[in-house]
Image (cartoon, rainbow, N blue to C red; front, side, top):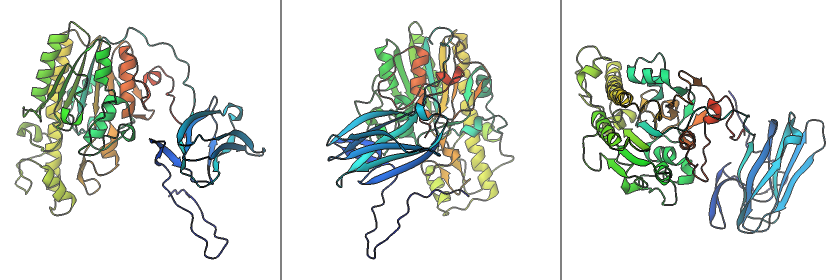
Length: 468
């Protein structure tokens, strides 16, 4: 067992008031601009212990609602303390700053972030230790001419892993031709905020599209808008009602179809057929196609030939031929008790949906190859979240942070850049997909995104992300 001590209060006077205890990180509005920050009600000192990598720097914003002094100090083992930074915040404003830590490279240090002055609302905005990426050669070959982004809604990443009992021959063949990021994580556990992150490169706390009624802000730039501004045709084929014009996701598309809102058949065979028809109409120009299927999502209801791959004989239990969201809730609350056979039947329906989808995704990928689009098109296969199938006493998604929900599926195929069969073990995030896709396509990055392009990892380098 491991534990961390957040703070200790040593009371030296009877009746002394307990100091204010605040969350370690929280949004702090300074001058009307909220920023994710370490709260720093004066006076306060945060101390961090780390080993400084070469070329490291500490980057942060600092802000307060009144005169407050911000200081950064460091002390290496056996050495005197060093003052690295001191400044007084401008009232009601955030100010950017960077502190060079390279003179301390290779040393174990205590790093102090301290505030002083009269009582104030103050904070250290997103303090991060950054290191430069390793030098790497430029990507081989030209930028991808086209981009196809396939997002399989509610698909557990472990269903596609080597050795999985779930039959996904089309994905397995694709993965042999692609580079797979085996330690990828989604930044949310349900569709709307997760897909908003996929399509913008922003963390959920930044785009703030996290609740059922949330609408994606107009000032947030989607991949579709960035591609359209670069001259691409843009088409979206979406089988989830949350990713719709009602919630601001129709920005930047030449063609946008939401199968749920338009009451169209939303099975994979229909979604892929429509996407292929649109691609045929636009294959003479550069295009970006976004395809979001929903087959593994409840209701689990699949042809018997697929569920029979995972369940022997007939099922005559209380769950019936389909699993609904209401039944998931009843199972999670214990109102509906599941025997081992009931659970195996539920898993068979879910796995059958994965296999059904894989069949039609494979037909779509084959059709791209038949049209000669597999060599110059970046194809990305991912998910938005997974699904719990009773592993932690719960069914469904949107309620926990277990791997069953947060593990991301990320496989990228574009032969000039992504080596076939390459597996990258570095941890990556859903927020990194948008900047990666744009770089591979040779399109200007979206300004101000939170994610980082994964191209350096593919070339054997590193991604310039915070180490602490």
